Image (cartoon, rainbow, N blue to C red; front, side, top):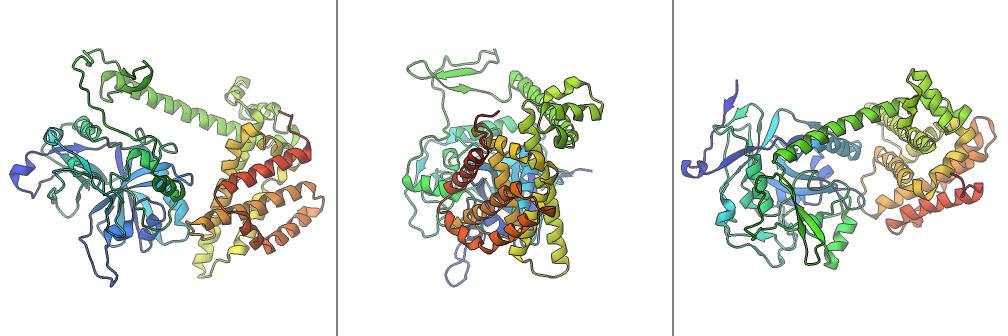
Amino acid sequence: MSQVGHLSQNAATASSLTCAHLKNRAVVRVQGLESADLLQGLMTNDIVSRFQPLDEEGLLKDEPVQSIYTHMLNTQGRVLFDVIVFKGFQEHEFLLDVDFDGRDKLVKHLKMYKVRRKIDIQLDDHLKVLAFFQKNAPENITELTAAVKSDLPGSIHCDRGWISPNDQVPALEFSEDCLSSVDPRLPELGHRIIAPQELEFADQADHRQDYQQLRYWFGVAEGAQEVIPGKALPLEYNVDYLHGISFHKGCYIGQELTARTHHTGVIRKRIMPVVNLDQEFKRNGDDEDVDFLNEADKKIGQNHDEFTAKAEAKKELHIKSEKRKADDEELKDKILLASLKHVPQHSWSRQAVAEGVQDLGYPPVSSGIIDNHPLELILFHMRLSNEQLEQKMAADVAAIEAQGERLRIRKFLRSHVENRLRMNIPFMGHWTEALAISSLPQNLCETVPLDLELFDLMWHYAGDKATDLNWYTKRISLGAIYKGTEMAMLQDKSEDFQHTWEFLDRRFQDEMDFSNLVKNSNDVQNVVKGVATTLQNIFGLQSKH
């Protein structure tokens, strides 16, 4: 039986609020003694000082907030997730309000950086996200101003963000199984609520469109469809004006580009709300998107309504398209997996794929789903091997912890570099060709990320928590060892590649020398590209493929 929710705020105020169930948002629970430490190294905001604002004597100097807005970035400084973080129901617990379509990716992202911390990370399907807001709020706002730079040391944002006449909004209070907070981005967006799925309110109408229009009025983007993962830059999406970034906290993943952009003061693009002052600019029921043109009649944007029938039809087509893509990827993976065992005989070729298709009993035309047979076979082998190595590293870490022993980083890394290289042994007869294909300029954008992912996984399972320049130093040092040993392996004719493993031991003994190779993040790509060029020169394969 569903519960009926009630507001404890005064009835006059409560009756003026509209409730929207944000079905495009999900909740991820992060709980553990080191949960704040994990999140602090991954997010743009300062979770420590905002939820526990202490002075120099360790005393509470400000009232702790109930929620904060933040972005999580990749190593290139681009947004992966836009998140509202709530202080959870229990100590050392945080609830992350995140885009529904990105919920699984966020869990995977957090678990990758969790390493050996005692933290529980999981989706919480028993909770939902609600917004309580005033539908007519924009009509009451006549002025928004940007405040001057804050002179408060350690302030969450350098410019404090947008200030409006409604800056003070009373909190809503619910039962103990709900979390309530004024929206940390802008108070005009109302209240953000995390509540049990079974909790219902008197107004059950779908007000998501009303809430979206409110966000658009203030130029606030939300979710993966608006804040494009891997492409969006946080400052272009106004994270500084929406109280979502600290330029005073320590290092975090992706900080380098963000901090440099902020301090240079040059931000060429920003998401902005647009108000239509042209009374003739109407849809007239035609349900069509309308282009925006500049003075030179060049298209600079488009008016798009997510809730029209046409938009809903586009969404349905998009869902079907994504389903077809997922089915195609599943079929492709089956074919590539079956094809790998034919690579020793037929190399990275169309014939190997044809043999794999035949093994599966599929019609020959099925091989057409694979565009670039050599490259896709190589990429699949790299991804599969990385996944298998990750499983092995996770099992080794769990065994070490279960025995109460301390993980020896150098020994751990050395062991798993060998484990990963051994996965190439079945294909050594054609590995020279694989390296040459991988190092072609047009293929580096796909092969280099897989190499970097491999080095990142090794360091994280080894317990690395660095978020400063050492993050780059450690990975490029390990990459230099790995790539050097991989090349030595090509020339090794000894039994079980014994000379290769001896070479690997020597490289690890000299490992500290490699830490001086890296001065900035650009060195990562430069060194890997240098290795690729060297491979091409050694084997004389620049002109092939």
